[in-house]
Image (cartoon, rainbow, N blue to C red; front, top):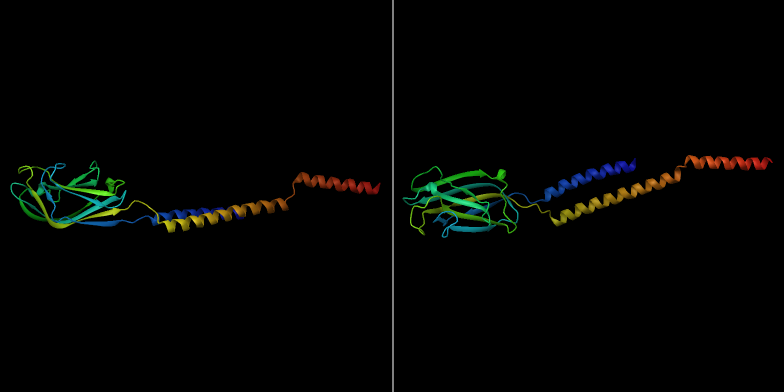
Length: 221
C-alpha cells in the first residue's frame, strides 16, 4: 500500500517536472528591424535588390509580423509593387508581402499593420538566419534602376525560439526525479523484506504442526 502511494506521488512529480521543463523553454521575443535605406530594384530573386540576413536563433519560429513603414515609388512605378519576401536563408519557403498592395499609384505613403504567421509554421533553419529580400512585383524601369524606396520605419517579428531547457533547471529537476525514484525502489524492497519476515506460508505452518504432533507422541511413548 505504501509503495502504491509512493508510486502515485512519483507520477505526480514526474508530470510536474514535465511542465517545469516546458516552462524552461525560451519564450517569444520580438525582433525589430529598421528598414531605412532598403530599396527594390528588380524582380524577386534578381540581382541588385536589398537582401538582409538576420540571426534570430536556430530553428526559431515566426509567430507574427507587424510594421510601421514609409515607402516611395517614383513614376511609373507604383507603391503597390513594393514587396518584401522573408523566410529561411535557403530561400525555398519565402513569404511575399506588399504593405501598400491596395495603392496602385506612384508617390509616397505610410503604412502600418500586422500579420498572423502562426498558422504557417514558418521557421528558420539550423543556421538561425532570417532572409529578407526587398523587390518589385513588376519591373517598370530599366534593369538596375531602383523603383522602390523604403524611406523609414520598422518591421517587428514576434519570434518563438527553439525549445532548449536551461541546463541548471533541467539538472535540478532530473536530480529530484532520480531521488524520488530511488526512494520508491527502496520502499518497495523494504516492503518485500518485511512481508517475507512476517508472513508464513500455509504449507510451512502445516509442516510445523505435524512436527509438533510427532514430538508429543514420542514423549507419551
